[in-house]
Length: 272
Image (cartoon, rainbow, N blue to C red):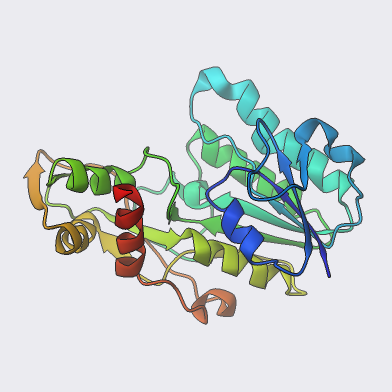
């Protein structure tokens, strides 16, 4: 039985991580409210009272914001907290959940493991800064995650918005021709990859991405098949359009949840 600690009690990923460690002693550190999925909760203010000899420490905690008014909170949550965690759990395997936002200064094209990070947003900069802190640890793994989806996800990104539109309005309205490409990864796949990489001896950074990149129209067509909604188009889309690829064996050998299956689950959850 391993001792596992998760920072971030109410993340979309927390439940999936807990399922990856059914036989281990898992505790969760919460910011505002404890997890309802376990009784082993610690408030963030008490984390330095936790035994530092954890086998694995997962760091999910993050403030996703690019608001300059939130700069102090971004620094405290996304950078200083990471520094404090890694110092207290200096001998643990640190698994840090980063983001492909570290590449958000790149507007179009292909990004792979060899691509140099180029963040332009406050959030992207803070995640890259935190990565540099984690890289100083004796044992670490960093996952640069693409667009995570699954049940309980928040209604603030493209995928949940168009699923809601399909269900409530029977119409998905796309910008331009729907050519913008994105990469989507199911929350369960992220958790499974994180568990795998936590067991590896080598320190490394991976792109936690699915093998396929989809145009907005392709995603809308999948949802149309599942809901019978209509698809309309308007204006032009000048958003970033990026394709991601990763050939690391941990990722390339992984059996991913197919996007249609994941969308079906998301639609069924939304309809409840």
